[in-house]
Length: 545
Image (cartoon, rainbow, N blue to C red; front, side, top):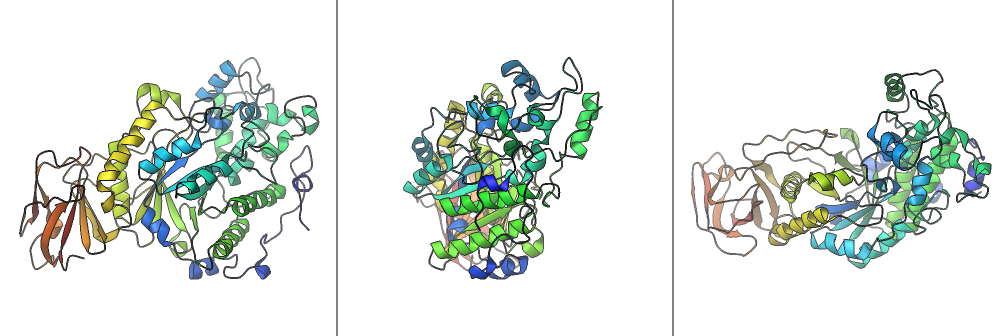
């Protein structure tokens, strides 16, 4: 029996039916079964992903409307946070005007997806990712199993569907990001209260509002409990300081568990149906789960196996789809692609991976524009070169304002990324790692979730290597001038690096003079030949690869 949304949730509580142990139907699907053994033994990363190297992400939702940066839907309910202060001043007290009102203010009135995608493709992006659902539990697509979606509230448009159509019309692979598995605890702040001040103890809107309260209002027929997840982990009465409230949140609804919520099986069931609907309706080439494992236990395995099997059907039996998750244990790395959020890898990874980072905050923050504090194009290019040399891809988030536009600073940065990629993309796209990732004085340490995604101060002496067909590429991570030396290509018996016959600039094809001795390959760089971010040279010969 197929269950609709109304059968899933009882109005008022957000709690209804019990989730089944396995929510896909393995008996009806061939290829993959919903267990790690099947995924590990049968999955292969598609060639398109390994060739693509660079994607751009629109991490865009109603949380971009206030232009206050990350996690607005949560932080607006945390007294003492800047987002709380902004909300109080701009929209009213969260007991009276909660995040559901921000969803209704998201209009996307100046959104021109084709124009943005033209810019991203010109920057070198080979795939594009749209945010489908964030931890705020709102679906940015025509969802069959969530009434709080962008076709009914806010933009009144199928945001994901429009992105998909426009991206594919430009030859870009299309990806979606799904973060909503954490909504059940992340939005419990909507049931809390101010611990201090004139309205101390008054519960926020999530605690008060039910389906019936919408009569005659813009949200008539919508149940706030469905959006906020139901009161399954409510801050207790009696907390009288901001410090005490923060401590409670940090210890209870703040952590990021990956197991399904025992107190809310209906949420688990609905997440499965929403995500399966997303997959079946839009046929994404990649699904990004913002999870440190497949989401919600068995449900994640059900979804991954369903998606992999669906991909086989869509592509005539070929494996052409990708699932990314984070913190993947070694014995699962052949089953999915690991995503390294705001982090690095120190050397070549045996399995393809993806690093994701952002020009600024994930959700649009106007202060970044005012302060001119975006990550510069130079650093993005250096990160791209470093990641690609280590068998990875780079997914870059370009924050979008609530109206659907990006600002002039972002547009300039994206344009500069494209300028470098047009000159030296041959050394990036469609390549594979060489014997070593690179050389140079700057140490790169493995890790992720690095606070602020700190800048690595690369120099022209930092070099990254890639290979394609019969060529070796060396990319300097800084402007090359005079002469560059590649110590890894020293002419010694120990290196065994073969014979160099030709060196040329990748962008112009001009031959470059070189010498080789026991200290390295020394390449003469004509004045003005290098881009300020660095340059790529193509090295051919015998025995180099």
